Length: 161
Ligand code: ADP
Image (cartoon, rainbow, N blue to C red; front, side):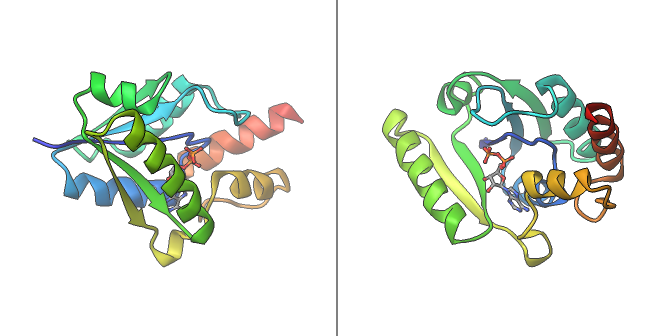
């Protein structure tokens, strides 16, 4: 049985992330979406909020679980007996970034393979940070994130002023 992990910041989850989750769930026996807690990015949502938002969107996918994880992704994966690390590639910039992370993870734990799925055209330009930027201007973002996430994002940004 192959257990895969899709780690990320997911601040918040986008329709691009969800497309990747659906595709990866068809490739592997089990998929764990890992909300990574220790990232250098300043987050808008807490790990628990992100886990709840993602879990609500993947409830129709029986082999997908959502968990928060601290520390190194490879250590989380070893604890979960996962052997495949899934990431997404949107463009050349992602490629360089993901290749370096894959090399580092390979050197940390040689049993883990990174599998990168190429983002599909309708989603390839979506990023959580860009979506947050346009949401701040009051733009409707439901094209880019699930409706429930769009509502939570607008509420959070309004509260921040
Ligand atoms: P991180 O901070 O770990 O990069 P992100 O939440 O920004 O976390 O991204 C998690 C993963 O999802 C990355 O591999 C990223 O390339 C991928 N990704 C982000 N947006 C999309 C998208 N629109 N389509 C496919 N993959 C995506």
